[in-house]
Image (cartoon, rainbow, N blue to C red):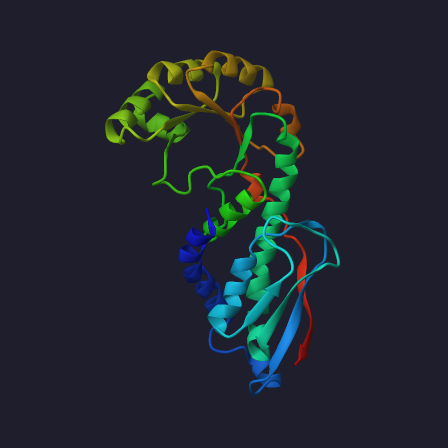
Length: 283
């Protein structure tokens, strides 16, 4: 997900978030600031982490007032430190006050994901294994959360259901078995599409290999079985392992030799990075 794609998909989601927060007016701001007055406020980091989502943060204020000016002292992917001033927002004080929470919600969430992803990606350095996200994202936040994973050093799995074929347990059950599911997928999908199959044991793995699956996902399998799966699949299919992968347990997976490790925790369990807008004053 690059910045161009981000911009084309972001405005609708940002406007929806602003409408959620301002249904008719910002009654508090309008109480204390009746007329236009120019001001500025500082973006402050309150804990160490990896910053992600600066352009989304900026866009919140631009959609409220195109004349808002923002100067950043860092860029997405940078490591930031507690107490560091990350930027200055300059514009109509009413806009700065009304946009503050929405802008910070996006930036804190995205930076938290980037920070958590970086902490796991660092544990995989030196191995061939790539860290992937999943579709376990916050509704209507996927474009932002998957971008944050990339900023943190991870890679994106399929973006949505139209993006790739992943035959999971219920698809296999509906089709009547692994071989049947793969056969039906090959018949239906364009030949340029890879077919991934989720398996839970070695017998299912062998069936998926015989059926011609391109990628096999090992779901909640033991380390011993995963090692055997990698041996059996060598040169025949790529291997992904999944199932409750977190920072605490990923280290034991690095020596198995899988091509990919996917973790829903990157997007569903990462804490936010604490950031704040401080020192608002008229200029």
